[in-house]
Image: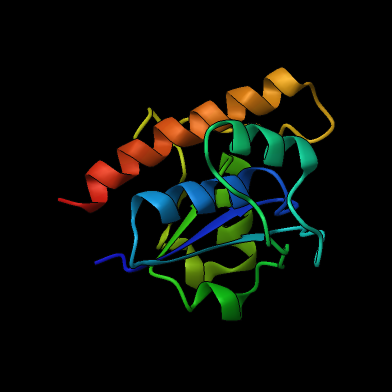
Amino acid sequence: MFDSILVVCIGNICRSPTGERLLRKALPGRKIDSAGLGALVGEGANSIATQIAAEHGLSLDGHCAQAFSSELAMQYDLILVMEKSHLERIKKSYPEASGKTMLFGHWQNQLEIGDPYKKSREMYQLVYTQLAQSTARWVLALKK
């Protein structure tokens, strides 16, 4: 049913690339990408996010930030965002995509995954853990 997933945050350099790669690893054969509502277009993944992912055996190499758009959204069956404010922004600015947009932390009591950008390494680690746990819950839901 959901053969393609777009993971969305703000800058597309910390949370969404990590979520994208976690989902790709867990759900091979599906089209999974990421984008940002205020993307730092062309940037690679944040260095701390990259280090923490690598410590868990996950590579963010080759990531290139891209901007969220209506055209991009229409290419995916499911859009996963990090915060409720992202849901609201998509509902307001991209109403055609709102019906297929959910929180990445949906299966964890609507968990919002905060932005670690310019925060402590511990915050990046917390975000990684939240993304990994949420990925596991999405995998269970999507394989039913």
